[in-house]
Length: 60
Length: 221
Length: 249
Image (cartoon, rainbow over all chains, first blue to last red; front, side, top):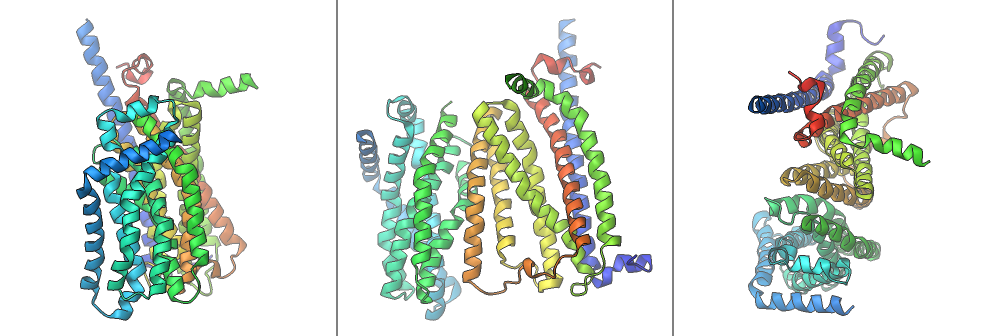
């Protein structure tokens, strides 16, 4: 075990800003990417469903 | 081979009719190079150090200027479509166009460079190496540029996109070209750099027309 | 032989790949999450403090894997591009364009973490080191690919043009790397290379490998996820899309 306490863990031996800046931005970037792709897929599906519904209405 | 020569001659004739385009690129090159001493200061030692890099970067940018027009006019009036249907392989015709492009945009830079180099107080020997490096390097710029020009044919925002695509690929030519002069000035000998530049040129002559042709076929579909 | 080829090509049609990708991505995502948890645990709790670089060196547990992934994804993109050009399959172009944003993201992360690692270690946010410079150029190549494919409206044409860019790029990447290295040795300046970092302990190597695997699984999952969106966008007027269960409401 490298860390005596939580604050020691967050301080990273004085390199906290750099270490958490790296890991934090990486995690945030990946999460944002997932969010954007989810949004993109949902948007396509929503649009398609609307189009199909409109088609059905006109056919009826 | 006849078709190749015919294409080169035709493009040169067209360029001769529109001389202003050739001269615009040349003056652009001169102006960009002259801006650097104004921006950095006139100390000769410093200028001598930055000269190869500055001249080479300006050459890259000047080559970019004329790339847009490499295929655009022929694409618009349908000549390109005719070429793709002709019995001669399109790659040969593309090579001819690239050679004509180099003769009208690269070669003038090679000839002008020593004059501009004098502004930077380069020695006669360094000017000679600069000329050789440009002579070997500018055809590479035309060859790689042809791929980019073919890919961005008829695409919106083509000009900026072209530079985005092509400039990263120009980096090796820039490094070896400017490096040759620097190595010579530092007394290390420019042979290594120049032979690598020659290798780039050989690679480019083999592969670039082929890739540019593939890209043109996509644009013509 | 031909039988197997036929089977493979069956999945090359977007209609059959769409549900397959939908089934596959959660597995890769789960695997990636588990690997990331293990990798993070190794990087923070198992790997000992470096005697020279202190705790700051822990950045390499994401910096190095991110750089690897950015290069690897470019190669995979070029692979799909080559498949697309030789077999004229629609799916390969979609895969390439699904991978590009993730590759660009990893290239960016590699530069970002490199800067954050370089500041305490080298005393500068940016050093014109051969690897960092090549990574920057790789980032530019990704941006060029994305910009070109985004500027062309016809998706089939965009795919083909993108394929050529990816292939030209992948041929050039070694040349660029070599030239930048050459340039770097000529200009002996602030060249503190990472190869001179203290010999890597086995736990460090394991941590990096597992993090790289986690990034790999993540990339597969997100690419499959994104390719589903791309398939739907492009195939919106086909009957198979209209007959999808999730469209019946």
